[in-house]
Image (cartoon, rainbow, N blue to C red; front, side):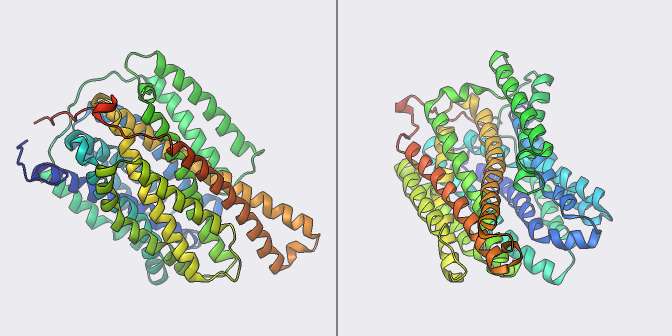
Length: 492
């Protein structure tokens, strides 16, 4: 690979092209992930399926990603960048085509599973490539560039989906993604080069089985609770969560005893990485739950349309996209600590304000608060992740990336389940306290929902305060601190 020094965060023009091609692939995959949520009611009506069955189009997607990501550490060490990226995009495109042409629920679900198989590989692969080719002092700017698409895609997804579904068939959501995916594959075929070193690590099949049961069980169990398909004493929730927890404990034990583990848990011996992990998990819990609860409140309590609920999210997503590269440059200059403290303070204040929402709360106020929420997340998410991975030696980058990506998925499912349960239980107890006729009174139902929302947002506020306390202990990963090393030269 030629080393054409042109400056900038990526060091050379060839490195820049590699990362930009991969960013476009990640963008289209993440955009597709958020497009479907608004379209579920139309899909249910068109295919004549119940809500519990339709929800599998989202749950199954998350489940496959949760199962696949722990294996990405092995795949990224075993296969070259170009082959792995093209395979992931081909899986994603095949799934998109199957979903677009599907005549029933089963083919549509198969399409979503194929899409998830590709998506699960893309972000860990992109992150690993950045850490392989970009020097430590410029990684904040590079990750900030990545952050533009990772934050902007989910923000425009619901709005774009609302517009399409209002005027066209839900199949257009898939057809519109196909040409972009094809362009990425063709561009990558001709332009993408291998930038990471490969080896032939041994694959432990028992670890793969434990990982599948462990992470898959937790994501499925908590997702079932979060979507309201089972209470916490329901076998639908209890069996996968308990089985997943036991399998995960055995998985950890297995990784600590293997010479070549599937996921190398020595990453947690690096203090900065182990401290950053719970901070990121807490923020993911708060973010996922807020993105679910807020539209629910707007539509069910304030009677806004799905499009109006989606538009509330748009300014925050646009601001995240604008601020992401700026925050990346600030990270390169000042480190993650103060960015994270300011970001978490904004996050905590917004969640506190959300706990006081009423039917009289102006639409504009909710939009401004959500924008501040997204600003806070953008100030700390990529900086904390970059700082955590900077603390690791290069040989552990693939493992660190896979661990953080996996725990983000799991914590998102857990956070959603926890806060939806808090909201549901508090709403139910409110109606019981109000009397036997309260459930049939629309005004009391809305009041019950508001009481549930308040409790859920207060719990989220408490979690963010805990993350803020942990952030006070955070230090900058650099060579002088003994954590973090110079990135290796890419292979040719």
